[in-house]
Length: 219
Image (cartoon, rainbow, N blue to C red):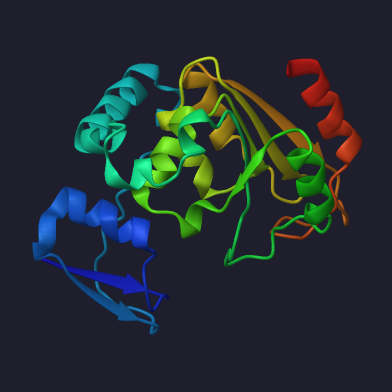
């Protein structure tokens, strides 16, 4: 079996671990920065409407937890090397080296404020699969800028808090719906950006006072 990765010259370690866990070591990966021209193509992905289908999400969550059941064990090697992971409750998600320019211009100020409140700051893209799962599994509050890392919400305990930071230029509801259907307590903090009619990824400054009010209210 050959997997062709377009537009990238490498996959992150956790992506390789997911593929290996599901497909074993028989997968051959090839990378190409050139566009692919084909006569026919089939695009397979879960429809966004499935995020509103609680039975499907429950079944999918159980499937993932069964696939990676060994990672949930405290004796798993990568778990034991992170002494803070087991007791972590509040986490801020950094976007790391994201491909698009959607980032917070005042993120350092935000991180400083959160660290004063005993938050742990992580970059999921730099973590292994097991580390990502266990960080989210141990968290009672996840805070961060809208992004793919929030798909790890599926590993969180029910009733956990989620604060998703978005802006008016790029404001999808998919991850908020995911949190709702997983019986979490998601909240969205949307920052107004300009121009009003622009839709896309832009850097923006977050109103830290609004984050403070949320934290004072919920924790």
